[in-house]
Image (cartoon, rainbow, N blue to C red; front, side, top):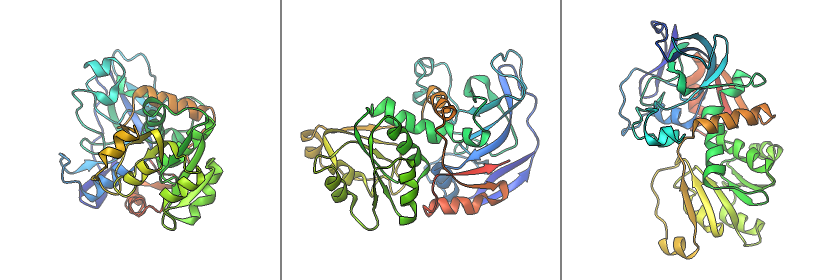
Length: 340
């Protein structure tokens, strides 16, 4: 079978390697059909000193496929069924896993595509419990965006920030994979959506998704523009994933008691905050990492109801390296899909 392996920083190669053996008891074998690229793929591609991993490593943290074979005792799946895979090797037995809080697993074995061989290979074996069925009406291309892009936003907005209908939300980087999803999910429940973009070419795209106000942060300070839009009242929620460049400005644009939820730090992992501002304004800050398998199912249900991911580009395994470089330069609108 073919696999897309990272062999050194910024060096990807398509290789032929042995196919996995038949699935063991409790396992399914999956034929991968589509991989959706994420910033975690960019980080892995350019090298992260703190990541404990061995190269070569199959990349890909988010994917969809079809069941190729099932092991003994598997009852939830049958060959040919469409599925997506959970992106972390959880234990399934700790208190968090038993309670359905998969992203709090106490004995997690790593993230696929970052610490462990990922989904960019034609065939792989997975425990049945880490596989989620895809509704018949959802394409495998779209489903590939559920395990990270959609479910991360679902977890951020509704499990953590508790976004309510009629609230005002600031979505940073509205043209990104998760930014586009956040706009759609917030607008679906009747929120007023303010979003930032780094290029005027993305303005019409985010407006078409439902953004009420768009700020080009390269031309105007989003802090001042947001306060103008809200008549100095501020926003109820900030959807943050940019990091150092925007974090403190995000605190400035929140209402008293506002909520900030963050899942990323693409512009840098370190910042300082004014603690007096934090407690005087009674801000609530939520760190949000990954999602649960329930969130993935909820995301697939939203796709089945017509909320589809924005696809920037579809590429083959041979064209992933330039696609990752485009992501790194933030020249994408939505998701990049790799077809197998």
